Length: 463
Image (cartoon, rainbow, N blue to C red; front, side, top):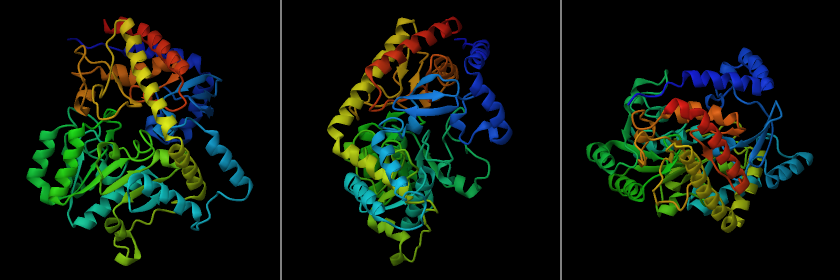
């Protein structure tokens, strides 16, 4: 089948967007003079230029041109309660007004209280804080390698564990997921990363049969993010736990995205899987920069005095930052206290989102599908990657199926659709993004109508 040529449509959309958002366009011209590509995070730099935001509240942001934009990016999926929830921003404002919140370099009560919540809600014995998910996954791998005295690190194809050496292999699709993602990675590190298939039991068993005695850790997202926004199959995650225990391998669940999104705690508990280490970030900061490694004390003790600081997990200057931990404690406490209200509502909005969006495209004659649909491991998934399968009705359960251009129209979902929807004042990433506790039925109806309008633009190019 001949694949659509979207170059003319993309040029048309870009021209219209420049007329639509002249203030953001002008600011982008200034930005590229001082910042690489005009910004400091590649995913934010939509082409031909990103909207430059001046305010954000709840499900919506406002850009330099005064457009109210319905947002499904939501702070890299961190904002479970939407942008700038008052339960956090009011607490921070009071603290700053009372002379507390900026970097001090001391320990305080908040560090203890935030760690207690994490231990209680994840079944962990110890916690150490740092400032980013990338650092936390790196430290988790270092701990595992030191604890086992083994070299090899196992991850899944399509899994993203941040911009750290042991995560930068097998992330993006290039006729497969086997390449090194960055220049500057030492060859020895690259050779020490072993890849398995996500939701592929045969692949997982093959790796452990061949190299189980050499593996230090298996680092895995129970709900894979950039690789498809889909949950691990129940039998896959349980096999990961059984195989790692059998072979003396440290199981690290990377829950930077998933923790506190599906329940007030880790998602591993919903699978009845207890990892050796769990990596946390995003939501645990309540909109501020916090990340953590939590888990077994005998592993995390490698950081401390008793083990002569064998693993140099110092955390960094801004680790356990007072304002960040105040926001994080406030946010996590709210989710714990309101768990029975927040998560059922999020699940219902997630279901409505998937139904409304797929129906909107179907009404325009386009077959759209969300990756991972049909997986019953989680009641409902508020992380949404929209795809357009070339075979009508095809299930999408692995990163390979999601990103193979022979299976899905990846250009349409990842390049054409985001710009077409932005012209309808809807901001999406990775096909759609995430729904939160503050997205309403009216918001989802707005999204569905935006999808209908975008589909009408696209249809002449795909038929």
